Image 1: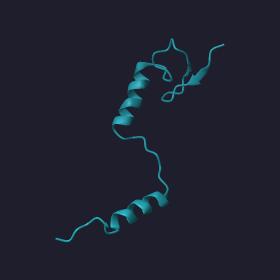
Image 2: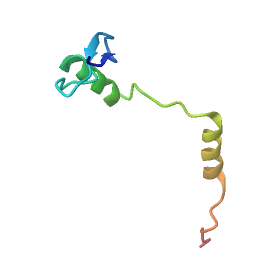
Image 3: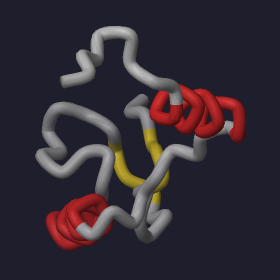
Image 4: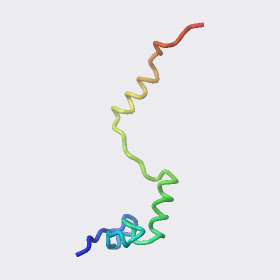
Length: 69
């Protein structure tokens, strides 16, 4: 029995196998919709507040390699 998964875009059940050139998508259309979302930066990975604060702290500290000229 083949593994059936939902298409990430339209949720239609699709067979996940090597014979499906668009896997995990059901069609070229859904694959291109997903690509367009990536290209428009529609997907993101949320960062915790701690990571952002660490980046800001690092930017605000004076560099020990700096030479006053």
